[in-house]
Amino acid sequence: MGSTTINDALDYLFIHNTGKQDIRDGKVPVIVRGEGDYVFDEGGNKYLDLMAGNTRPNAIGYGREEVAKAMYDQAVKLHYFTPGFFITTPAVQLAKKLASIYPGELKTTCFVCDGSEAVESAFKIARQYHYYANKQRRFKIVSRQMAYHGQTMGALSALGFLNPMRNVMAPLVPGHVFLIPPYCYRCPINLTYPACDLACADALDSLIQFEGPDLVAAFIAETVMQGVGALPPPAGYFDRIRQICDKYGVLLIIDEVIVGFGRTGKMFGCQHYNIKPDIMTMAKQLTAGYAPLGAAATTKKIADAIPAFLHLHTYGNHPVCCAAAMKTLEIIERENLVKNSAEMGKYFLEGLKSLQKHPIAGEARGIGLWCALEIVQDKKKKTPFPAKDAITFQLTLAGRDHGVIFRGMSNALEFAPPLTITRSEVEDGIKALDKALYDVEKKMGYK
Image (tube, rainbow, N blue to C red; front, side, top):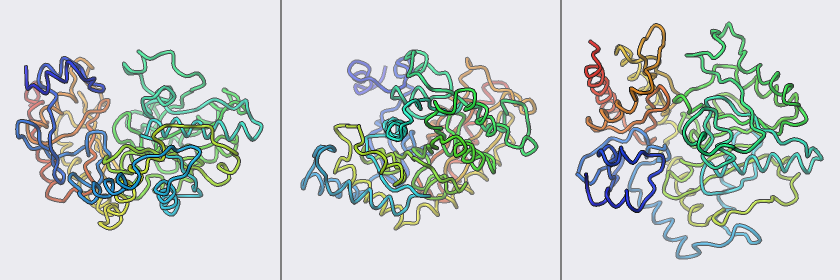
């Protein structure tokens, strides 16, 4: 059935979001080592990592000794102290550094362990701000259909699509409502951009009116949506959203957990759209995955209105994790990785568009080094494959056979390599994907 490690994993370890039968069938490799933009499994197979650790945090590649040393030095000096009632220097230094690069008027930061906790913290900031402004009735959170904001109960309640996790964990936190998404490839209201005049954004106005303007605390939106695979918004979308939020006094939470710190070719994804968030969530590339850290930042106006932030996580403001983040940011800036993301992302997207010659390859889209390729049964009708075909999973397995790691998300394949990826590695990745598409098409009877 596989190695001792796989057998022991089945007996002793919960593997997140992974079917046990897939593990038994040998479809879940044991990754033992990373170097640069590559990882190696216990069988010695080498893979070009086109997913930056598969959940997209690894901005700077594998094996960065200077990050490990920064963590070691901090652990020796002070490995931990509580985030409440006392102050530690690394958290203050990191918060100050981030304030110097934040978009808009963001200034004050709360550090937690990951992106889901960052979203939970953002909801708490919004609710507490309204509470101290004598608007205690504001409790509802608006998110979008097809949105992804994490897996803790509050974040999961803002999840905009049905999946086993949402269904099994129901009932979820009350007060969450959903807006239609800006999914132009398959418009939920059958309109065409730009003739639609951003009807999907204007729908927020009527939704807030229906839910009660004095009951809505915040609207949360990913800069680029994940639920259907790297979906950037159409031009003007967030301008309209900002106007509507301001009209009703609703706080705008921008979720940068995936795209923050260079993924889109700018330091923050919202800088492409001139968004000024009231609250912003971050994680993943903040430490490049070298240590667990998430963050929620807000403006001075909002922070000053909260006399004491009612929140406490044991590992918040963790000194070692903050040290890892400081060194990661130093590397991102020193090696111009945001610029590389923009340049290599453009090249990667060109490569994906060249694969639209395949009969099952639909829209290629993306921004910076976060791209997607829609997989369709019928290109003219944009018909997706039936769920039973598990088409994107078939393609990810075929990709591994050709030495690359990417993932499926809804009806799309998703790509988010380390920001260190080179031109030749992009070319290798596109060639491998081309072969994987041919393999699956042949298996399914396409010519």
